[in-house]
Image (cartoon, rainbow, N blue to C red; front, side, top):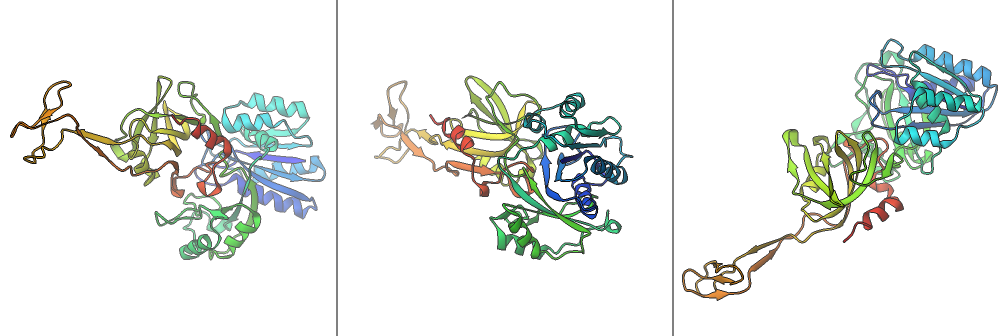
Length: 417
């Protein structure tokens, strides 16, 4: 069977993955075999999300009715029911729903009624609390199929420590990263000298290590010195896979979806209030504004280095009429030149225009020239891919250390002139 849980936390505390980890242990105590546990990230643009829009799915064997009762009891005990925005959902299904519903919730928006229709069609057990919105993510979690997958080891705090400063040794995290990168990533951000894997929210998570395999995240975890955790859980995840991205075309983008689109830079980037950098991307006579916000830090320097005529592909979420950038690929750089009147060889003064199609004339000695000075400036960027730093990376965004999927590279190169 597949057990799905979603929408149990709030900005003030709790974490759905923690409830998943607790449920795994309670199922094992009852002698119920656990086949696997998945952390399923869904559309990052949903306005109702608390933080990372994560649901969990546990695959197990046993009596479905008993498991459903146990899962509901776990949620009823631990979920943040007092928070008005928390609306848990629990699903237990002996038949997996079609993956279409997972992709719809990952890349688009769905309703509670649509989730219930899916659950009824497969005869699943389900319970939605309050407005039942958690049934959407719980159903998507049990329907999820990962064509690319990563792993995360999550360590959780003891209850008496919740809401207090986390005790995790900073140097040990940098050592873990140094030893296991690139098999693990986003533990720290070396360029910005920042710890990434330790949250600052008042939830039960102590730290999380992301990587390519269970062995890699466990190895990294072995270097970490911290307060004693209550428990730990390794999840299979869709994090770091770009599973949320759709190939898109400028002029056809829909609010709240995430896209990879290509085009030509249509104007010089501009730095606005707060340090946000924007530029216009054009394709087929239509334009879209692309935004690199201040938290993306050095990534903004890449954006500032673009000039009109550069051919690029950009990935990000379309919100409020702008694409909020997660990464950028450059397929072709326009020549950056400055054309000026030539210097007179006789008196070393710069000439001036002699009139349309008449070349240049020296005002001092009367010398003439037909050819201007053409100064080619070296570009500060090169063709290739650029990404936001780990401190600004979204959960679903695929770090470049994992490589670029073939479809993304194909889309980038198809935009070359």
